[in-house]
View 1 (tube, rainbow, N blue to C red):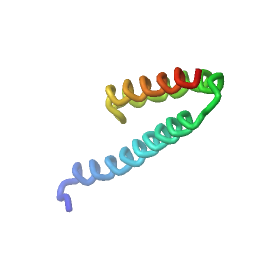
View 2: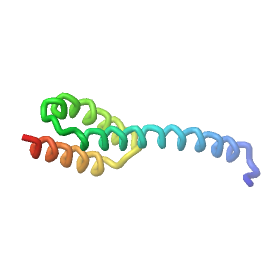
View 3: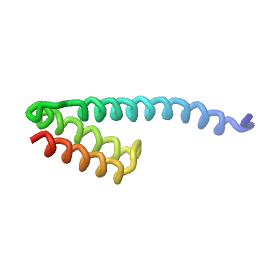
View 4: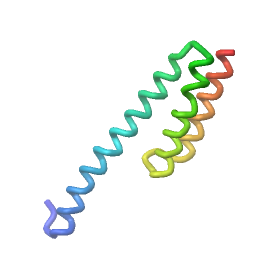
Length: 84
């Protein structure tokens, strides 16, 4: 166990931040999963900007890597194209 007050505080803060990051990462994964199950192109085109915005925000705050966000967005665009 940590001996310094600052390290105890850091441990407390890390727990909160980890929980926060896990929540948003899981929300993102569920949104992507839901998007990939859409069979209607109009609905997919309408939903894509919100998912794109979510991925960009998570990449900006380092919850996911920027390349992962780019790869996901690319894959989702391919999914929209395949619906046509």
